[in-house]
Length: 232
Image (cartoon, rainbow, N blue to C red; front, side, top):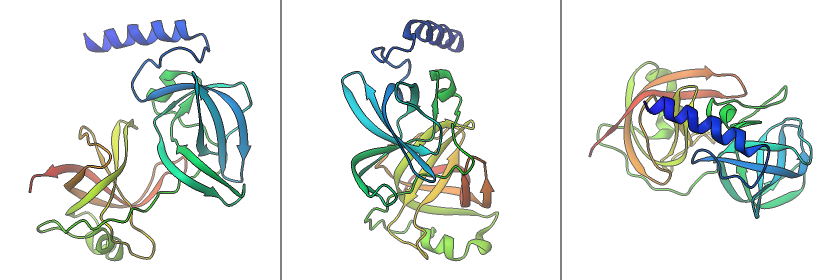
């Protein structure tokens, strides 16, 4: 019954929106805005969008966009005082997003609009001191010895720094524990059902997969799949 109700609600909202920026988004985490300004770099497109009475900057893989366009998009990952070297400009706040579309349905399905060389948003490093989990390893050790861990189940404790749901039918979790190896400090993990919150410190167990390429510029040197949360 729930899928039918959701489908009916979606249809009603899409009809009522009629490209108006004053409508309430049909689903939490999906927003609608009108493009007020477009800035292009070699790999990124920056959009200043107006959501009702508020304006905010979005950053996403390079795409064609024009002033006046209406887009739907997901929450994104906010970075404060972000400096774009190409633009020689510091944004007080900018949201790096990975899902955008002309309709809310496209965003819900995980559609990504990108150019010929899409890239992932840069991940901010946090100053953390997360203790190592019992029988676990650190993120730095995983990157340093990735071939030794390939295909194995590992345990890692870290802080959730970014979280996206329902992309390619999976939930995506970014973890950091304060350690790094040659500049690599952010670990991505996936689950079909597991839900978490940004800022939450969790201990997970997952299978190490290497060199995972999902297209759209989403390549992962290391990915933990089929994860579960462990209680300490």
